Amino acid sequence: MKKLLYLLLPLTLFAQSFIISKIPLPKTYIQNLDPYECDDSCLQEYLDNGYIFSFLAHADKKLSNKELDEIRMMNVAILNLGSNTVARKVKIAMLLPYKKIGKYASSTTNAVFAYLITKTHPFELKSYKIATEDIEDLNATLAQIQKDGFSNVIAPLTHTGAQNVVTLQPTLNIYFPTIHKNDINTTSPYFTFGAIDYKAQSELLTKEAISPLIIFSGKSNTGKKLAMYQEEAFKALDINETNSSTDNMQEEKHIYKYFISRRTTNMEHYLKENEKITEGSFILNTPIVKSGMIMSQLTLYDVNATNVLSTQINYDPLLLSMTQYADRKNMVVANSITEHNNILIEANALLANDIMYDWINYTTTVGIDYFFSLLTNEDREYNIELQENQMHYMIELLQPSFSKFIPYIHIDRVQEEDEKTQEVLLSKKISSNS
Image 1 (tube, rainbow, N blue to C red):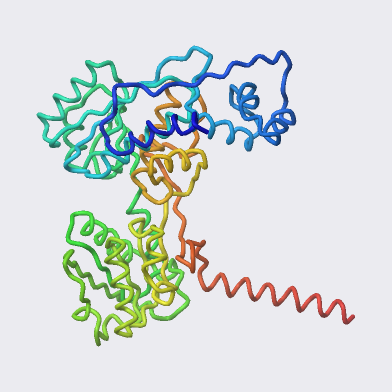
Image 2 (image 1 turned 30 degrees about the horizontal axis):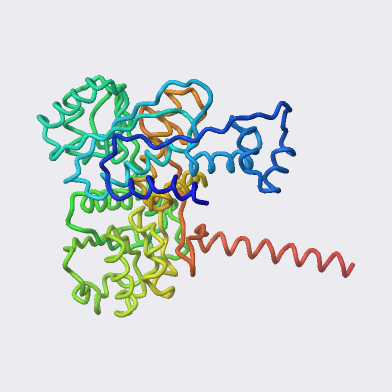
């Protein structure tokens, strides 16, 4: 037990800052002295008897049994095991505009670090902090990264920073976890983009909307961009494309957009006795706390919203604890975090890091997985397709239920399933009577 606590201490210290220590973590090596082979049943017997080091001595490579391999990799991460085989060092640089991205300077670094400690390859992870995303700062830092012998860079930049990097055209492999390729004009093979597709999410969500469509957004560039995506997508929809089971979809669709400031808490001006938005569909492009406030006031002012829609912004377990079920029961959330790796989730948890709900940490993990596969020829952990240098994530629609997010099933589908069930029961009854 003392040895385990000793090994976890550097991880805890690391989580306090995004400045990576130059002192490497101690590696643990397990020597296999058993001259006999050990198959899956043998490995399972070691685990059942609590002989974890005997198990690890034999499980020095990837196992074909998925469950056993998960246990192997989890212990590799916890015990910081080294490999007895000689492997080329994996070198990854982090380009961090810490004043622009705030907490993500730390959390994205933790996400990369958590991934690498689950592998047995030696690695070097170095962060390069920049105060601004100006071309001068970026140019000098990218030159230093190249001088230090790094070829692969993970860069959680803002749109301005990414555009400046594209302008500089460095000959480095750079992955942008925060940027979607549609938002940057480049054909360079050196750049890979990992952000989720808010436009695709908006197009899918608007198929669940009816007129009037009411869009609440923040006044930021992101809020305005989302509102534009959703207005365009809703106008482009043909009535036959919608999943609405009502007749409220008029030939002339009505759209109302409200851009509210961070300080706004009372929505009475927008919601109370506003007949033009009654029984409409609401899209919330607002942070989780503001979204919860809006939903509670939709109920307070008897707006009778048909449904409430949201993109990835509100895929957050906090939504379940800060809102009443009555306020969120007709809510639909688009989500692109659809692949879960238990080993990486737990490794991140050691660093108090979240890759289950935080999409930037998730896309950063997808990026280091992609680079690691290129450098080592090992299989990727995430089966996310790369299309023209953009990670292409699947989108699922979810509903915030009583205690968790559950798959969204449209009312028409529920009715169809109920009708099929009734038909089956009726046919069985007829058969039994005959």
